[in-house]
Image (cartoon, rainbow, N blue to C red):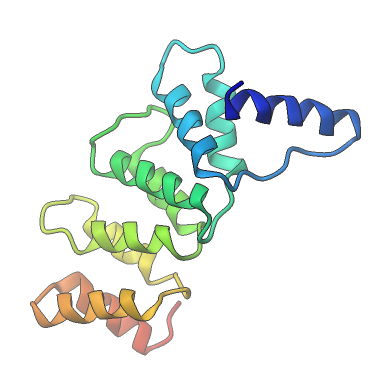
Length: 161
């Protein structure tokens, strides 16, 4: 039985107890959900989208890492999901609050080629859970002349988040 099938069975059990589905914290399950999302003809696709968008835990869980990486592919145009535009993907990243989502936002914002670099920089300005490694990336990009890094750092210096 797959992790997704197990999750659906658990949802039914919890529903019988009057409980909502548990949030998803397992990256393997999110990987299976993404596979369903990518299969446009799959009958479980709509539910998979809902679970991906609304039930995946934010933060530093393995699920958050898999979700952030998939959203990055959408923003960069490597994957097309009609229900999740690049702008919506950035919005979803903005709600994930740290860890993998910040890494992805930095990857996009500091990119020389992404048309969404500035928008990712705007999202970064709202994030308060950056680690030293994240700040070092911003510092290094700033020193290399990256205008978005400069803009984000100036925003942080003014505590605009």
